[in-house]
Figure 1 (tube, one colour):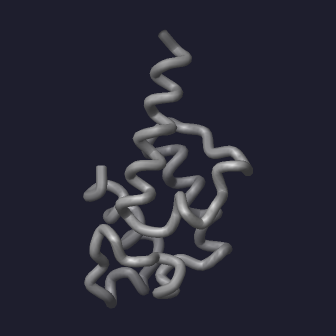
Figure 2 (cartoon, one colour; figure 1 turned 90 degrees about the vertical axis):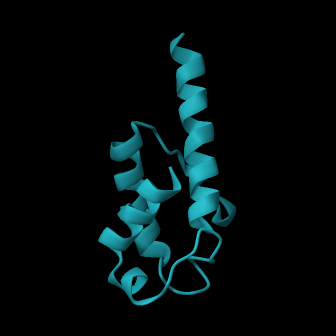
Length: 85
């Protein structure tokens, strides 16, 4: 999952290609992702992982790093899997 999210980030944000982006690097503090970029990222994550991200999910901790995004997406997918059973 981390690799997939890393790929999405490097595809969407050219600045991510200029730095060695680790799984725990702060995407917001480094400026790789800004507030407008979060919206683009949300759209791509929803499509790529077939999840719905609601306004309440738009907190910095969910979008802080590749690792936090992976954990967030996994939790959303588990919720979707749990409700479709």
